[in-house]
Length: 231
Image 1: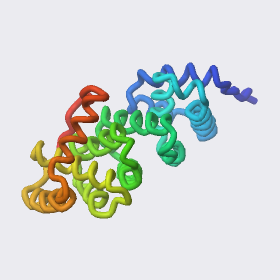
Image 2 (image 1 turned 60 degrees about the vertical axis):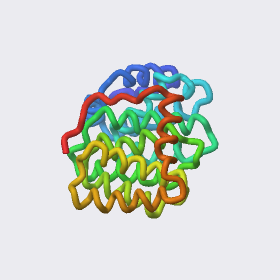
Image 3 (image 1 turned 180 degrees about the horizontal axis):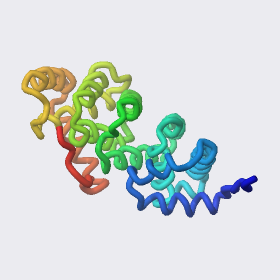
C-alpha cells in the first residue's frame, strides 16, 4: 500500500510558493491528475495556510494557496467564501483581492458550471462588501465589466447594482457596468438598459464612481491583466 504523504505547514508553504507562479489552467490540470483524496488534502493544507497568522501574510504563499483553491472550484469556492466573509479581517480582504485578480489572468472557464460558480462568488462578494474594501471590490467589478466579457457578467453586475445589500457593493457594480460601456462590448439594447440603471445608482452623487476608482488606483497602482477576453 502506498504510504500517505503528510503535508506539514512547511511542505504546504513550499507548494503554495510554487503555485503562485503557475498559470491557473496548469493548476487546474494538475488538480485533475490528483486523486480526490489528494485534492482534498491539498485544499485543507491551503486553507490552513490562509488561516495561519504568519503564512497568510506572505504574499507569494497566500496567492499560491488562493490559486490552488480557484483551480479546484468544486470545493475550493466554498473554502474561499468562508475565508472572504470576515470583512473585519485585513487578510480576508487580501485573499479576496488575490482571488479576483487571479481570475482576471485567465479566460472564463469552458465549463458552464465553473463559470456560474465564479460568477456567484463575485455576486455574493459585491452584494455584501463594506465600503472599506475598495481594491478587492474594484477587482471583482473589473473582472466582470472589463475582462470576462460574457452576457452573464452583465446580468450579474446588474443584479448587484439593483439588489446589493450595501451601497458600496451597488456602487462597485455600477462601476463595472460603466467599464463595460466604455469598452463598448455590450449590445446596443443592453447598453441602454445599463445606462438607465447606472444613472439610478449614481443619482445622488454622479461623480462617485470616478472618485472610487481613482482612490483604488492611487493606493494600489494600475491593475493590469494578462490578456483581453473576446466577447
